[in-house]
Image (cartoon, rainbow, N blue to C red; front, side, top):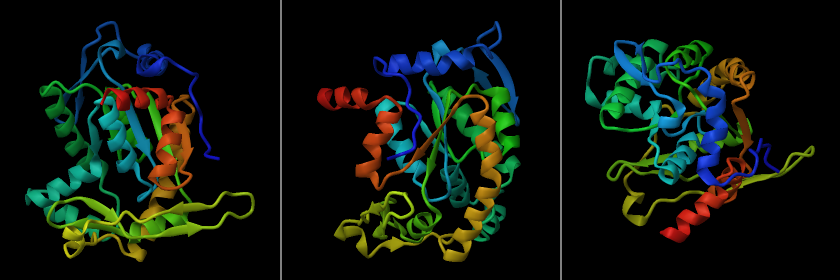
Length: 285
């Protein structure tokens, strides 16, 4: 059974917004459009009633934050902003940060607050200029300092903490592959962990590519066992204070993934009270 904190049964997404926004609405000043500095950029703090959900996804490297945040992004119509993608885009751009980021990523270290906040600031500002509302943040914040900075300019409604055993995380990371032609992500790992000591077993089928991508698969340079273990160690050292930060605000929802996407996605929707919403979307489609 997945460890979840379920919200009271609602009438779809509108009720979720009311429940989640109630805690953050008090933090908004009398002027609902207070603009605060975020690096050298300006981000508008909007009244909760005038925007979409603003959620954060936490979880160890390889847990699947991007997968589930992306699915929720499509379901809710809210932009999914992954700081890992922002870093990779900067790496590919040959910009001023490219060389510095290459060394950091290859060594399995975490990117500095200054760099991440700069990249995120530009992305949020660009989205605001295009009329985007709300976001699903993936990979930020990672530290208390980052969380405090974010709190100063944004009202976070909910923090979803996805969890998997470390042995499963390592297998998943080592199995990740990317098609150099189409850019899609796959995973060749076949995971089958037997339950023990009262803990349920976990099975995850591989996410194999089509035959057209098979010969074009590449492995990320930081997906070696040594680097993966180092990244997990660094993450675990920093994650507990961050989880406590949001837990003390009543915003943390912990979710133990029961398996792969087929097993976990319905359970996650249920935990978020979006299962009925997903069914109506499917019927409408």
